[in-house]
Image (tube, chains in turn cyan, brown):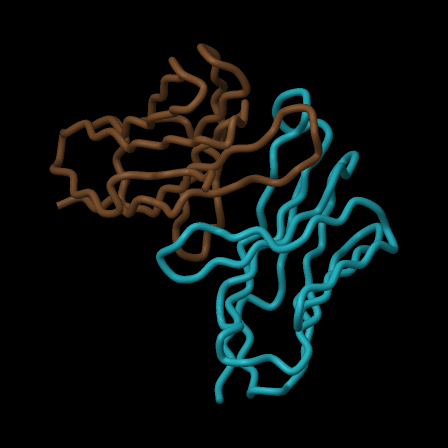
Amino acid sequence: EDQVTQSPEALRLQEGESSSLNCSYTVSGLRGLFWYRQDPGKGPEFLFTLYSAGEEKEKERLKATLTKKESFLHITAPKPEDSATYLCAVRAMNYGGSQGNLIFGKGTKLSVKP
Amino acid sequence: DGGITQSPKYLFRKEGQNVTLSCEQNLNHDAMYWYRQDPGQGLRLIYYSQIVNDFQKGDIAEGYSVSREKKESFPLTVTSAQKNPTAFYLCASSIVGRLYGYTFGSGTRLTVV
């Protein structure tokens, strides 16, 4: 069964304390892994797409990496404004329709204290 | 600017009542999706549509209905058969045939009163 698991469920950091969020997946035929940021009461906002193992993407204090079984979202020197829920999703070849729909993890809620 | 508009932002439903959530996009995307989000549950797919006048059930379609009469619009009706409708509902769209992610609307919070 196609599955996406994110850990930890919640993470509390002090401002400037770097850390990583994990997204592990078991899918048949990965066609892309996506990271989103979601603020309370709002829709998810796209961050990164990764397509193949070894690929890395960066945006400000965030860096996403991908292996054959998992992805990491590294947060370097986080600030309070980085506080949000971070969602991971994968597009699996056989999940829904010809292009494959996204399968979402439950998210990691990040809190950064000043 | 292009985007997805969901309305209303907040919606209250009485027991036994049907309600319709609106989703409109001007991104010229072919595919549209409805998700339900509950605390600790993540996003669960309700319905999706990849072309006008065609749609498919997702993982939790029972108690919901949709229509896709126009490319830009994909309304979701929460029927009285949905026994636990209180949740945050998200609409999304994407390009078919390319490996892009989804663009999401800002969501509708539905509460049963």
